[in-house]
Amino acid sequence: MSTKKLKVAIVGSGNIGTDLMIKVMRNAQYLEMGAMVGIDPASDGLARADRLGVAITHEGVEGLSRLPVFDEIDFVFDATSAGAHVWNSGFLRGVKPGIRLIDLTPAAIGPYCVPVVNLEQNLDQLNVNMVTCGGQATIPMVAAVSRVARVHYAEIIASIASKSAGPGTRANIDEFTETTSKAIEVIGGAAKGKAIIIMNPAEPPLMMRDTVFVLSEAADQAEVEASIEEMAAAVQAYVPGYRLKQKVQFDVIPESAPLNIPGHGRFSGLKTSVFLEVEGAAHYLPAYAGNLDIMTSAALATAERMAQSILNNATRNG
Image (cartoon, rainbow, N blue to C red):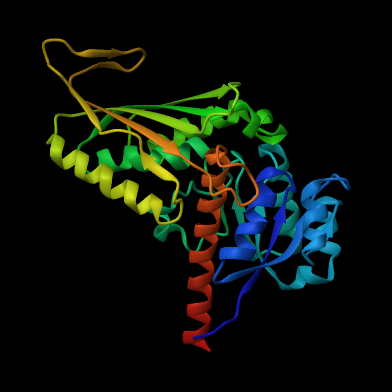
């Protein structure tokens, strides 16, 4: 088997970028670090990358394009902010049209990607968007219900520790809710989606918790529960700390007493409630920061599968 690996650059040397770098170095089968890119010369992420022998620049993507290793870079993970990604994408596409961008911001230039739901359909995309931490945790649950029954409405509440939210996360709160709500519909299969994020300042910091409410047409509860448990196991393959916190709960909404969803209408059917916990792998971030861990884990799983596909095609065609 070929041991060739494709090189990656990580743009954004904060919490997410640094954790992602460590995951690439420890866990990646088809990828290896090429460069770490930041804008703060004093950032811990750049210092750590330098100590680990990774090429660094504090001059953003323009600095990346000037590094000797840039010619070998096939993938760029962008862990900056939504606004910055729009600029970064335009610049990188201009200097290297075929480069693959994995967008960990809510910019959503490319299609939304949640690995367990739709990665295989997006293997050839040049820019995929990893939605948000809340999206990666909850959209699989919405999709698990929607493959059994038509989903009228899905609402998710992502609760994260304040300490796990760095400046990039805080700058993107509005985009978080908009991007996650849209992705619940586009990938999750809900007719209408809503996302709420809560930053909990409790001490000691609490682990990421997610609540998912799904209102669907009437369906077999055992079938829905089995679909949810199967999907949770699939997510655990790349996020080991992802788990159902308790058994799935069901409420039958009779036609005689329908639920009113403001702005959307009155619905009867089945209300499914899913309660999740996401524990981080603690590669760089504390275990309570499952919200960041699920983003980096999903991004790595996505790029790994794309790289595997590229290398397999090269082998077949070579």
